[in-house]
Image 1 (cartoon, rainbow, N blue to C red):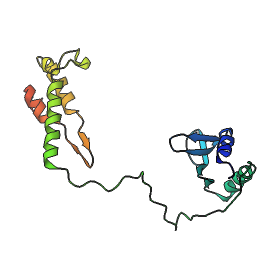
Image 2 (cartoon, rainbow, N blue to C red; image 1 turned 120 degrees about the vertical axis):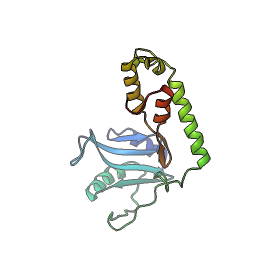
Image 3 (cartoon, rainbow, N blue to C red; image 1 turned 60 degrees about the vertical axis):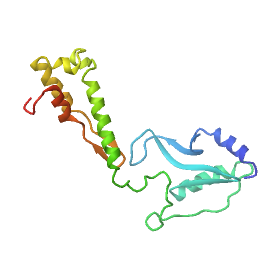
Image 4 (cartoon, rainbow, N blue to C red; image 1 turned 90 degrees about the vertical axis):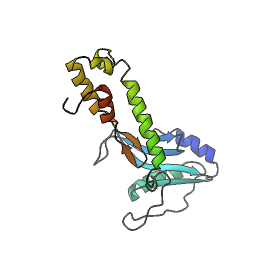
Length: 185
């Protein structure tokens, strides 16, 4: 491109291009559901300015030819080359955004600290008003058989604490013991 800023301005005028400020990429789109897909638009390709070059990526020769025609009509844009990748044989470049290897086993001291924090949070919850219990605290709701049943269901439904590589089960049994609720309730 002779003038990348001018090309960027012209690309911004097109109705069929959607610019992503964060990624610095234009999506070439068509309104309508993809042939074998869902959604409200079909992504036909992407365009990205890289210094004085404009990179066009599409997945078919037909789309390439269509885009090439309107791109070469822009002032100062010249076609340089096309590269074809066979998805069945060419390995794709490694993407920095893909998750890395799973972390090793967690540090036992850290896990103990997380268990203590999780249990302390549960203990505080026992003494906070809960709208589903008529704004009673779980501890106060346990004064009646129905309240004990409802609190037991809520405690047993607590979600585990997620951490990279696993989950720490909710302190269900400790909280039920704190309330004096047995396994049979």
